[in-house]
Length: 253
Image (cartoon, rainbow, N blue to C red):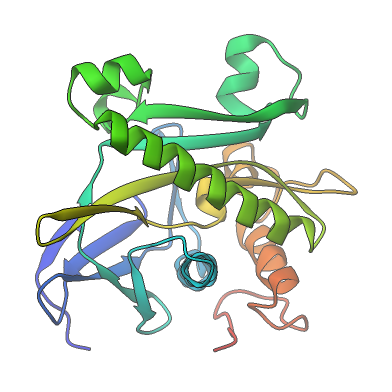
Protein backbone atom coordinates (compact mmCIF):
# COMPACT_ATOMS: atom_id res chain seq x y z
CA UNK A 1 0.00 0.00 0.00
CA UNK A 2 1.30 3.46 -0.90
CA UNK A 3 1.99 5.68 2.08
CA UNK A 4 -0.56 8.46 2.36
CA UNK A 5 -0.81 11.77 4.13
CA UNK A 6 0.29 11.70 7.77
CA UNK A 7 -2.53 12.71 10.10
CA UNK A 8 -0.90 12.35 13.51
CA UNK A 9 2.22 10.97 15.15
CA UNK A 10 2.19 9.84 18.76
CA UNK A 11 4.70 8.14 21.04
CA UNK A 12 4.07 4.63 19.73
CA UNK A 13 2.09 5.00 16.49
CA UNK A 14 1.68 7.08 13.35
CA UNK A 15 -1.73 7.59 11.72
CA UNK A 16 -2.03 7.99 7.96
CA UNK A 17 -4.95 8.82 5.71
CA UNK A 18 -6.66 5.59 4.70
CA UNK A 19 -7.35 4.34 1.17
CA UNK A 20 -11.08 5.03 1.51
CA UNK A 21 -13.06 7.78 3.24
CA UNK A 22 -13.61 6.97 6.89
CA UNK A 23 -10.50 4.78 7.19
CA UNK A 24 -7.06 5.31 8.74
CA UNK A 25 -3.80 3.38 8.43
CA UNK A 26 -2.27 2.85 11.87
CA UNK A 27 1.50 2.28 11.86
CA UNK A 28 3.19 0.78 14.94
CA UNK A 29 6.63 2.19 15.77
CA UNK A 30 9.46 0.52 17.67
CA UNK A 31 9.70 3.48 20.04
CA UNK A 32 9.29 2.76 23.74
CA UNK A 33 8.50 5.52 26.22
CA UNK A 34 7.77 5.67 29.94
CA UNK A 35 7.11 8.27 32.63
CA UNK A 36 5.34 10.59 30.18
CA UNK A 37 8.15 10.19 27.61
CA UNK A 38 10.93 11.09 30.08
CA UNK A 39 12.45 7.66 29.37
CA UNK A 40 12.80 6.71 25.70
CA UNK A 41 14.37 4.00 23.59
CA UNK A 42 13.91 2.18 20.30
CA UNK A 43 13.20 -1.54 20.75
CA UNK A 44 13.65 -3.47 17.50
CA UNK A 45 10.57 -5.56 16.67
CA UNK A 46 8.27 -4.02 19.29
CA UNK A 47 6.01 -2.38 16.71
CA UNK A 48 5.66 -5.60 14.74
CA UNK A 49 4.57 -7.53 17.82
CA UNK A 50 2.17 -4.86 19.06
CA UNK A 51 0.54 -4.65 15.63
CA UNK A 52 -0.06 -8.40 15.56
CA UNK A 53 -1.12 -8.66 19.21
CA UNK A 54 -3.52 -5.72 18.91
CA UNK A 55 -5.03 -7.39 15.84
CA UNK A 56 -5.45 -10.60 17.84
CA UNK A 57 -7.22 -8.87 20.75
CA UNK A 58 -9.37 -6.58 18.61
CA UNK A 59 -10.48 -9.44 16.37
CA UNK A 60 -11.43 -11.48 19.42
CA UNK A 61 -13.50 -8.59 20.78
CA UNK A 62 -15.24 -8.07 17.44
CA UNK A 63 -16.08 -11.78 17.37
CA UNK A 64 -17.87 -11.62 20.75
CA UNK A 65 -19.83 -8.50 19.83
CA UNK A 66 -17.64 -5.82 21.43
CA UNK A 67 -17.22 -3.26 18.62
CA UNK A 68 -13.73 -1.96 17.79
CA UNK A 69 -12.21 0.29 15.16
CA UNK A 70 -10.10 -2.59 13.76
CA UNK A 71 -10.78 -3.60 10.14
CA UNK A 72 -7.78 -5.65 9.00
CA UNK A 73 -4.00 -5.99 9.26
CA UNK A 74 -2.25 -4.68 6.16
CA UNK A 75 1.31 -5.83 6.79
CA UNK A 76 3.79 -6.44 9.61
CA UNK A 77 3.54 -2.89 10.98
CA UNK A 78 0.27 -1.45 9.70
CA UNK A 79 -3.40 -2.08 10.17
CA UNK A 80 -6.51 -0.51 8.65
CA UNK A 81 -8.90 0.96 11.19
CA UNK A 82 -12.14 2.88 11.11
CA UNK A 83 -11.82 6.61 11.63
CA UNK A 84 -13.54 7.77 14.80
CA UNK A 85 -13.76 10.72 17.15
CA UNK A 86 -11.69 9.85 20.21
CA UNK A 87 -13.29 10.53 23.58
CA UNK A 88 -10.56 12.52 25.44
CA UNK A 89 -10.26 9.95 28.22
CA UNK A 90 -8.03 7.02 29.06
CA UNK A 91 -10.05 4.28 30.73
CA UNK A 92 -8.07 2.16 33.19
CA UNK A 93 -9.46 -1.12 34.51
CA UNK A 94 -7.68 -2.59 37.54
CA UNK A 95 -7.97 -6.12 38.92
CA UNK A 96 -4.95 -5.97 41.25
CA UNK A 97 -3.17 -3.07 42.95
CA UNK A 98 -0.18 -1.91 40.92
CA UNK A 99 1.46 1.20 39.54
CA UNK A 100 -0.06 4.55 40.49
CA UNK A 101 -2.96 2.97 42.42
CA UNK A 102 -0.59 1.13 44.76
CA UNK A 103 1.47 4.31 45.20
CA UNK A 104 -1.49 6.65 45.74
CA UNK A 105 -3.26 4.48 48.29
CA UNK A 106 -0.30 2.78 49.92
CA UNK A 107 -1.52 -0.69 48.92
CA UNK A 108 1.00 -3.47 48.44
CA UNK A 109 1.54 -4.17 44.76
CA UNK A 110 -0.23 -7.33 43.67
CA UNK A 111 -3.05 -7.10 46.22
CA UNK A 112 -6.26 -8.48 44.64
CA UNK A 113 -9.01 -5.87 44.45
CA UNK A 114 -12.48 -6.82 45.75
CA UNK A 115 -13.89 -6.04 42.32
CA UNK A 116 -12.55 -4.44 39.13
CA UNK A 117 -11.97 -0.72 39.60
CA UNK A 118 -12.49 1.58 36.61
CA UNK A 119 -10.63 4.91 36.59
CA UNK A 120 -10.63 7.77 34.10
CA UNK A 121 -7.75 10.03 33.07
CA UNK A 122 -8.00 13.15 30.93
CA UNK A 123 -5.91 12.65 27.78
CA UNK A 124 -3.32 15.41 27.85
CA UNK A 125 0.38 14.54 27.78
CA UNK A 126 1.40 18.05 28.87
CA UNK A 127 -0.64 17.62 32.05
CA UNK A 128 0.50 14.03 32.60
CA UNK A 129 -2.96 12.54 31.84
CA UNK A 130 -4.46 13.50 35.23
CA UNK A 131 -6.97 11.32 37.03
CA UNK A 132 -10.50 12.73 36.77
CA UNK A 133 -13.94 11.84 38.15
CA UNK A 134 -17.27 11.46 36.39
CA UNK A 135 -18.13 14.90 37.80
CA UNK A 136 -15.23 16.44 35.86
CA UNK A 137 -16.22 14.53 32.72
CA UNK A 138 -19.82 15.76 32.92
CA UNK A 139 -18.88 19.34 33.86
CA UNK A 140 -16.49 19.79 30.93
CA UNK A 141 -18.67 17.91 28.42
CA UNK A 142 -16.12 15.26 27.53
CA UNK A 143 -18.82 12.57 27.59
CA UNK A 144 -22.53 12.37 28.38
CA UNK A 145 -24.00 10.25 31.15
CA UNK A 146 -25.18 7.76 28.52
CA UNK A 147 -21.66 7.68 27.11
CA UNK A 148 -20.25 6.97 30.56
CA UNK A 149 -22.72 4.13 31.12
CA UNK A 150 -21.71 2.65 27.76
CA UNK A 151 -17.99 3.18 28.43
CA UNK A 152 -18.25 1.38 31.77
CA UNK A 153 -20.12 -1.52 30.20
CA UNK A 154 -17.63 -1.83 27.31
CA UNK A 155 -14.65 -1.63 29.68
CA UNK A 156 -15.92 -4.42 31.91
CA UNK A 157 -16.70 -6.61 28.91
CA UNK A 158 -13.15 -6.09 27.63
CA UNK A 159 -11.87 -6.98 31.10
CA UNK A 160 -13.87 -10.21 31.18
CA UNK A 161 -12.59 -11.19 27.73
CA UNK A 162 -8.93 -10.35 28.34
CA UNK A 163 -8.86 -11.80 31.88
CA UNK A 164 -10.17 -15.15 30.67
CA UNK A 165 -7.89 -15.20 27.65
CA UNK A 166 -4.80 -14.47 29.72
CA UNK A 167 -5.71 -16.84 32.55
CA UNK A 168 -5.95 -19.63 29.99
CA UNK A 169 -2.26 -19.18 29.11
CA UNK A 170 -1.02 -18.73 32.67
CA UNK A 171 -0.96 -14.91 32.75
CA UNK A 172 -2.59 -12.62 35.31
CA UNK A 173 -4.25 -9.50 33.87
CA UNK A 174 -3.32 -6.95 36.53
CA UNK A 175 -4.72 -3.89 34.76
CA UNK A 176 -5.08 -2.34 31.32
CA UNK A 177 -5.85 0.92 29.57
CA UNK A 178 -8.13 1.49 26.60
CA UNK A 179 -9.45 4.40 24.57
CA UNK A 180 -12.95 4.83 23.22
CA UNK A 181 -14.04 6.34 19.90
CA UNK A 182 -17.34 7.67 18.60
CA UNK A 183 -18.61 6.68 15.17
CA UNK A 184 -21.76 7.93 13.49
CA UNK A 185 -24.19 6.06 11.27
CA UNK A 186 -26.35 8.95 10.12
CA UNK A 187 -27.69 10.54 13.28
CA UNK A 188 -26.97 7.43 15.34
CA UNK A 189 -23.81 7.41 17.50
CA UNK A 190 -21.97 4.30 18.65
CA UNK A 191 -19.00 3.90 20.97
CA UNK A 192 -16.22 1.52 19.95
CA UNK A 193 -12.85 0.38 21.30
CA UNK A 194 -10.11 2.38 19.56
CA UNK A 195 -6.33 2.95 19.63
CA UNK A 196 -4.64 -0.38 20.50
CA UNK A 197 -4.68 -3.25 22.96
CA UNK A 198 -1.18 -4.61 23.50
CA UNK A 199 1.36 -5.29 26.27
CA UNK A 200 2.16 -1.56 26.00
CA UNK A 201 -1.24 -0.82 27.52
CA UNK A 202 -1.54 -3.70 30.03
CA UNK A 203 0.16 -5.11 33.09
CA UNK A 204 0.67 -8.84 32.64
CA UNK A 205 2.26 -11.10 35.25
CA UNK A 206 3.04 -14.79 35.04
CA UNK A 207 0.60 -16.52 37.40
CA UNK A 208 3.19 -18.89 38.85
CA UNK A 209 6.32 -16.75 39.07
CA UNK A 210 5.04 -13.17 39.05
CA UNK A 211 7.40 -12.37 36.14
CA UNK A 212 6.37 -9.15 34.43
CA UNK A 213 5.49 -9.50 30.74
CA UNK A 214 4.57 -5.90 29.93
CA UNK A 215 6.06 -2.41 29.59
CA UNK A 216 7.08 -2.42 33.26
CA UNK A 217 10.06 -4.47 32.02
CA UNK A 218 11.19 -1.29 30.22
CA UNK A 219 10.05 1.12 32.94
CA UNK A 220 11.93 -0.75 35.69
CA UNK A 221 14.90 -2.09 33.68
CA UNK A 222 13.92 -5.71 34.33
CA UNK A 223 15.38 -7.19 31.16
CA UNK A 224 14.46 -7.48 27.49
CA UNK A 225 11.11 -5.97 26.50
CA UNK A 226 11.02 -7.95 23.26
CA UNK A 227 11.57 -11.20 25.18
CA UNK A 228 8.61 -10.35 27.43
CA UNK A 229 6.29 -9.48 24.52
CA UNK A 230 7.47 -12.53 22.60
CA UNK A 231 6.53 -14.72 25.57
CA UNK A 232 2.99 -13.28 25.53
CA UNK A 233 2.70 -13.77 21.76
CA UNK A 234 3.96 -17.35 21.96
CA UNK A 235 1.58 -18.33 24.76
CA UNK A 236 -1.37 -16.89 22.82
CA UNK A 237 -0.33 -18.72 19.64
CA UNK A 238 0.39 -15.50 17.75
CA UNK A 239 4.07 -16.42 17.37
CA UNK A 240 5.60 -19.87 16.91
CA UNK A 241 7.08 -21.40 20.06
CA UNK A 242 10.46 -22.11 18.48
CA UNK A 243 11.10 -18.42 17.77
CA UNK A 244 13.64 -17.04 20.21
CA UNK A 245 14.94 -13.79 18.72
CA UNK A 246 12.71 -10.87 17.78
CA UNK A 247 15.03 -8.83 15.56
CA UNK A 248 12.82 -9.83 12.66
CA UNK A 249 9.84 -11.60 14.21
CA UNK A 250 8.16 -14.40 12.31
CA UNK A 251 4.45 -14.15 13.00
CA UNK A 252 1.63 -16.49 12.20
CA UNK A 253 -0.90 -15.17 9.67
